[in-house]
Amino acid sequence: MELSCKSEYALLALLELSLNYDKGDPLQIRQIATQQDIPDRYLEQLLATLRRGGFVKSQRGAKGGYLLAQAPWNVILLDVVNCIEGLEKKDNGSDAVLTTERQVVRGVWQEVQTAARGVLSAHTLQDLVEQCNAKHQVDLMYYI
Amino acid sequence: MELSCKSEYALLALLELSLNYDKGDPLQIRQIATQQDIPDRYLEQLLATLRRGGFVKSQRGAKGGYLLAQAPWNVILLDVVNCIEGLEKKDNGSDAVLTTERQVVRGVWQEVQTAARGVLSAHTLQDLVEQCNAKHQVDLMYYI
DNA sequence: CTATTCCCCACTGGAGAACCGGAGTATACT
DNA sequence: AGTATACTCCGGTTCTCCAGTGGGGAATAG
Image (cartoon, rainbow over all chains, first blue to last red; front, top):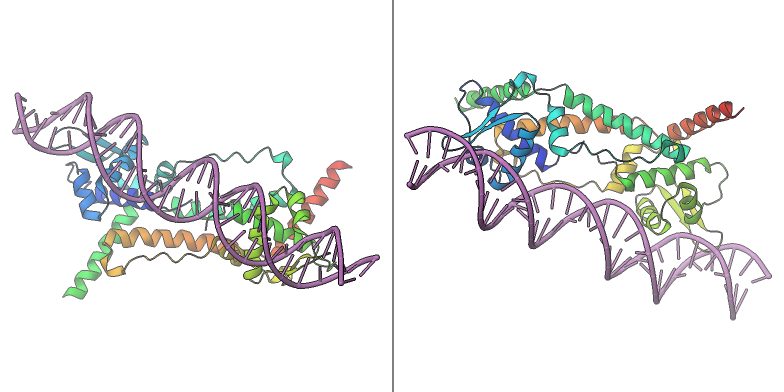
C-alpha cells in the first residue's frame, strides 16, 4: 500500500483519460505527459502495465493513443494501485515458525493494511473526476 | 507509513522489553536478538535510534542492556514507527504549481495516510503485550 | 510509402534496506 | 587497579527497487 510516484502518475493518467472518456478519441502519451508534467518515456511503461491490467486500451499508429477500457465509475482505485504497484506476495514464512510476538505485530500490520485498502476501495475514478470539477468551479468563482 | 522490516524489528524489541518491564532488570541486545531471531548487529542500530527517540534507556558495561524509558501503556505505536522510519518531510513543491488533478490525487493519498495513522495511534505497547498473553493462553489450552 | 504512435527490452544512477566489522567507552565485579 | 562485559559510534558492503533514459521494432492513418 505504498503510494509511490508510480501510482501517482498512473492515477493522473487515468484521471486525464477519464476526463476525455465521453469524447471517445484517444489521448496520446505525449499529451498526458505534458499536461501533467510526467516524463513521457516513463509514463509509457506505466500505461503498458495498465493495459496489461485491463484498465486502458491502446490504439497504435498515427492518430493512435490510449482510451479507458472501462467506465470511470467502474474503476476502483485500489485495483489500480495493486496493478501498478504489483501485488507482491511476501513469503511470511510458515506461520508455525513465527514467535507469538511476531504474529501479534503482523496482526497490527494487517489492521493498517485493511484500513488503507478500505479507503482506496471506497473511491472510483469517477469520484476523482467530480472532485476535479468541483475544484475547477471554486477556482472559477475566485477568478470572477 | 511503511511497515518495513525495520519497524517490525523495533516493535518486536520494544514488545520484548515490555514483557520484562515489571522486573526492572535490563535486557541485552543478544537476548532480544536470539529470542526474536533478529540479526543482532542490525538490532543494535535500531535500538540506538529508539534511544535517541526517547523510547528506551541504555545501561552500559557488564550487566548492562536496555530498558523501556516509558511505561508500555504510554507508548503509542505510531510514534515508534515515525521514530524508526524517520518522518521524512516530502517537499510537495508549492501547492500553487500543482495541477488540479494532482491536488485531487494527493487528497486521496492524505486520506489513506490518515486512516493508517489512525490504526497505529490507537494501539500502545500494552495492547501488544495483552494480545501476546491472550495468545499464550490459547496455545496453552490447546496444549492441554 | 511515410510519418506517427505505440511496443518491448535493456540500461543507468541514486537511494535506501539489511547487514557486517572494528575501534572506542562505560560499568560491574574481583 | 584490572579485566571482562556490553553498549556506542563510525564506517563499509551488498542488494533491491524506483525513477528515468535509450534504441530498435511493429502497427496504422493518410
